[in-house]
Image 1 (cartoon, rainbow, N blue to C red):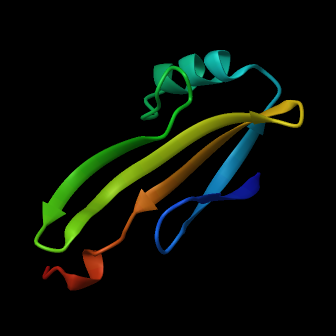
Image 2: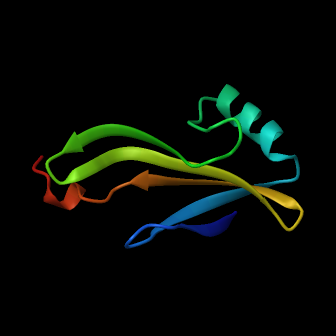
Length: 86
């Protein structure tokens, strides 16, 4: 496990899981298990809800190869949810 950071205006932290296999292999295996990922590892956003203040209630993922390991980052999309009613 590791921590990561998605570039955004206010930043979004993410939890990462490390793998030895290449990005394409990790993406294929994660996708087969139901994870929301792009085959090339690029950032992907699954939006479950949109409101007047923006996107919220979803997931943001990315897979990257760095220093001989592949890392799968995953985080909840939470920005702007503080402005929404229940």
